[in-house]
Amino acid sequence: MDFLKKLFGKGKDEPEELHLEFENLHEWSKTRYKREVNAAKPLISDLYSAIDNKLDQLRVDKNSFLDATPIESADKKMGKIGDSNRDVIVDNLEILDEKINVPHDNSIEGAHAFYIESLSHMDSFLDNTRKSMLYAKSLYPAEYNKINGDLANLNHALNDLFSTIENPRNKLEMISNIFEDIEDIHNLESEIMDCRDNIGELENKYTSLDENLQDAKSDLEELINGSEYPRAEAINSEIDDVRQQVMDVEADIKRMFTPLSKALSRMKKQDENGIHTLSPQVRNILGIVMKDPVSALDYDLDPLYDELILRLQSDSLGLKDKKKDKTLEQVHLIKTSSSLKSLCEDKKKYDNRLEQLIDQLDRMDVYHQKTSMEKHISKKQEALVSTQDKLDDETKRLKSLEEQLENTKSKLSSDVNAAFEENIEINFR
Image 1: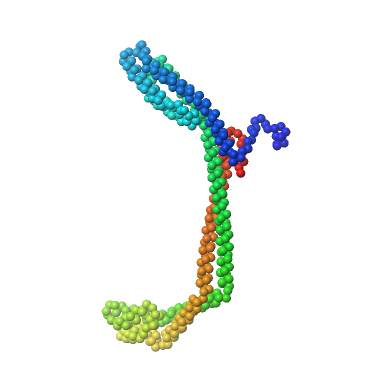
Image 2 (image 1 turned 135 degrees about the horizontal axis):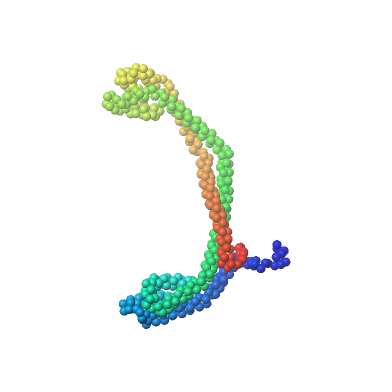
């Protein structure tokens, strides 16, 4: 096909393609815009002169109408009606003459505004004189025909004005759209450049944060693989074991006091109700034992044991024999056997060991370093995630802006070809 074009040239109906650089399009379109404006000015001026002539003729018609007399066949009453309606028409002709002012500016937009306003005034005249014009037609036929004809001529002149400016005005509007498209493209290109700069900065920030994060993780790994951390872990593990031993001993101590709970509860209730009042010392010890038997071991519990034995033996607690015997047996066991004493010694031993281990661990800085490093790593990870989110948002925004730019370029090409009715290709940078 290209060979045939070179050999025979383009077909008669095939339009020449015009190539325009985007950078030159605004000035090129502006020149065309001015050409359209300047081409329309003399035509508008001629039509304004024609409209002025029509208005002059209506002024002549108005004066002739003022001097007119009704037809001979009209009686006196009809003559008065005719005079009254003639005044209405004359008054409205004067208003029309006052309202329709031909502009001195020959711009297309000014002409369009003048056309719209003039049509509105013409419609108002017709609305206000419709009935009066019917009387004028009957009583002043010659003057009516003259006014009616010249009003029609004025209307035709206004329509000629509109017909003359309609296409240029549409073209100017399309060229204005081109200017808007060009501005939109410039704005989008500027936004895209800013967006790409932001993406570059965020990518650099992400790389820097990632490198710092990897370094921080390496430092933490080095700390964990060092000589001090395994020793701290061993101490921490032993602390867990000793704590469990303390908990086991405390559980055993509480179990020894569990069989006494019902008897102790009744002692407390009777004391509160004033049935068997306890001494302040026994009352205090009773409350501690019921709340936490382990902490009660720091006190002398013999007064409580003795009070409980007496109350059980006297049956004042109202326990059944079997429960009473088991409770007495358990009280004597706690008071006389070495089991509770052995448990208390074990607890003190474990407590002392636990205190030593915790103190030893507190003196080691490795755990504090590890905690500090982990917090530092966590902050770096949060910053990395936040930066990645911003980077994703900017990337999506860039894609959206690029799509808008392509759509606006396509719209611009369409608007250019529609406005100038030529086969124009725009070379975008």
